[in-house]
Image (cartoon, rainbow, N blue to C red):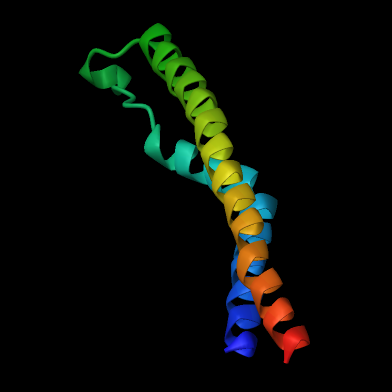
Length: 98
């Protein structure tokens, strides 16, 4: 029983650390993929001003979403690392008390 608690704690701790380390990269990728601008070709009535405005708007939205997503992933990572201490501590206590 103690070994399983320690294993669960180590796995949760590792997942939390990975989430903390990759928070910015994952958030940037998700925000960029979700905000591709709709660029109307010039031949269909789109102007360079409209295209630039759409590009700037998509970049601004992506930046805002990246901050929000990175914060959420960081919080999840922190929660996992803190929660991982419970089974780790329980497993060590059980192991030492035997």
